[in-house]
Amino acid sequence: MSFDVQTEGRVMTIQITGAFDYTLYSRFKRIFEIAPDDMQYILDMGQVDHIDSSGMGMLLVLKESTDGQQERVKLIHTPLTIRAILERVQMHHQVLIQ
Image 1: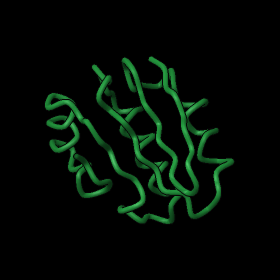
Image 2: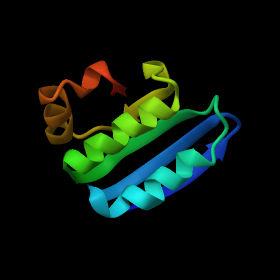
Image 3: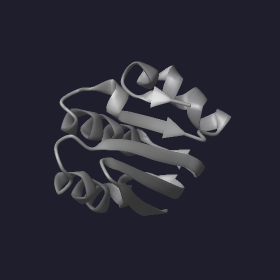
Image 4: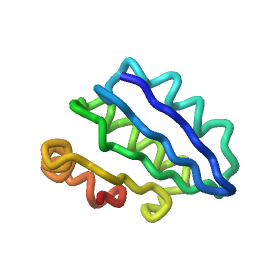
């Protein structure tokens, strides 16, 4: 349960490893609180093995930080098991999932 952040221009890539859960909340939130308002976010979910309701909540908080612009939050390399969970709760209507 960790993440690595890389920023290039107005695109921030966050690579998450392990569980995407409440243990990451305060550090995750700090990332986008200090980012410019027009930042685009790419979350590399390739190494995520678990997501709970707190992780899903963090995705919604991140989307809200973009003024609700779905196209500015993209999940990439999402494992099928994680994707199925996100689709079950209709998260694909909130953020782009690849």
